[in-house]
Length: 207
Image: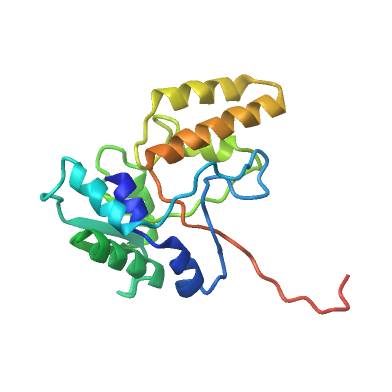
């Protein structure tokens, strides 16, 4: 089901049309330029036909419940990106999906409550506190971590994260994190969307 949802979203069109190429398409969890980043072994492809087939093979075939997409915001106007994602899921998978806005304080406090978190789908960004793969892969995907909002849990991932946390050789650590990243992406707990960019206008005489 997770793979079906991921393959039903035309992320490239969202980047090119909705975001007007202001951001770049994300195929990995670690962004380019981050220590330990490598090009993805396989890229997530937009394939609505395959997505339908995967959903039909799941235990939810013919009985997928209504889904709510939660997002932070207010005022009744949701972002074009969220509208595009939900429209694609409706069109390609026949999902009955609605959008629920919540103010930021309520949104994040609900995410942080592992017991009463009702979110089926949501969007959120992550900015690293320091330039190391640990601050993405360990913080966001280790079993039981506070920021592991989707409650993702893979014992093999945790085992390799334990090794990477104590290994003193940088090259070895990065290889372990690269292995972890591929394992996480193969489980589809998240759909990477974009890498952020910042723009600045600078006078040509400024050096």
